[in-house]
Image (cartoon, rainbow, N blue to C red):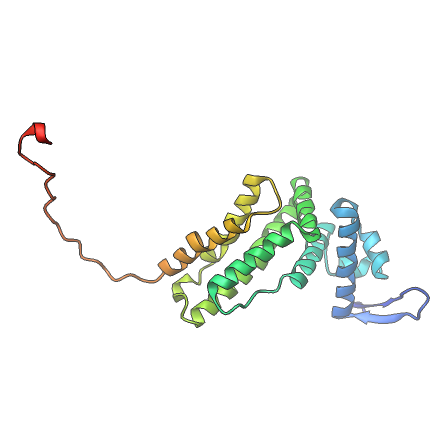
Length: 230
């Protein structure tokens, strides 16, 4: 048997040979199911291997430790449920992506992420991977929205910047931290887009130099006149 394949068995049916992406998907599905049922603390390589009908060696060849598998399983869940929106406008896309993120945070998948974040306080590897995941997945989605907006001439090319792309999610996470709740009112999401994100995007357009002219200040009423009438 090749190093990157195994024989998976379901129930009493015949064993089926799996390799490559098929085997990887089976492992990720099993790990995601363990996260939903037992949380990160209860997810072990042994449990995932049994559920995926494979062996631990097949898992360790892909993910060196439990933290890497846990984050990969969460990413698998999030990616399959939150595709990048394409409404035809930057405002529509930004609002829809924030709404989906907000809905996910208060969903069972969001509970998994909150569980991973809580566990990361005692697991430096997990914390590092979560930080990388947060910047990677969401950053890519927001850069995609901005790229489409630039192509539609909705936004200047200068707006296609990682810092600009990161701003909406940074503000949303701040709202979660401030409120202590896994959900933010829709009015707040609209404010993030309309009052902060879109003005920033539009403001990235290069401005023509402005000539400053010195003008004599306008004297106040009754300047130099009767002080009693001021």
